[in-house]
Length: 240
Image 1 (tube, rainbow, N blue to C red):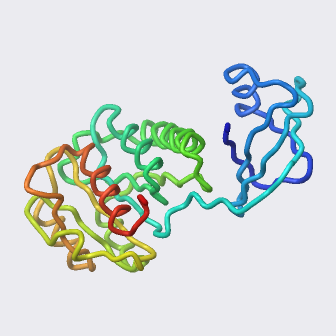
Image 2: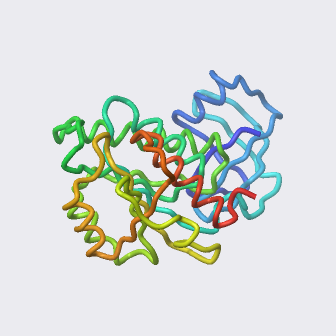
């Protein structure tokens, strides 16, 4: 079942823009076929195509129900910016795994340091990738990808979370000792290609972060966020 997002859905709804083009040009759907639209209240609407025109795709609601595809835990991923297009893969896979929000962080050892113009362009692309991944994985929401921020500013946000876990190659507690299925609001920090500087670790732990390990092997910067998210979803029973 093809999956789309909209703010509000009434009995009849007009799909326009890129979604309409995707339906008609890529999916080659026709009148009478059905698709699902998830709204801002996390309801999924089964809809049938009634008309395709230059204005868009008109659909009629057949049924509606609460979308049950979201994890029980809201995870904000503070992922250090990686070089090249690795961050795009991190965002795509993180959304598929159930992340709630992604914040790219500039740390001391980040190789990629885009200027403001390039950063804004990347931000727009990252959000588009998140939207596409949310459609593919049938999420109830499109996770937000925030603008880039430095680690000091990120550390100042830690009071918003029930727990903050810093995955550090220098060691820490096993993840199973830090989280439970009852956790609601969690922050995860993963580092860049060169890892975290010790002063950055101190900054985060002084603001409440707990260090954790992902095992004895050193993971690549683009692997660690996905391993961390997978482990969190497993330990909170969201991979069952």
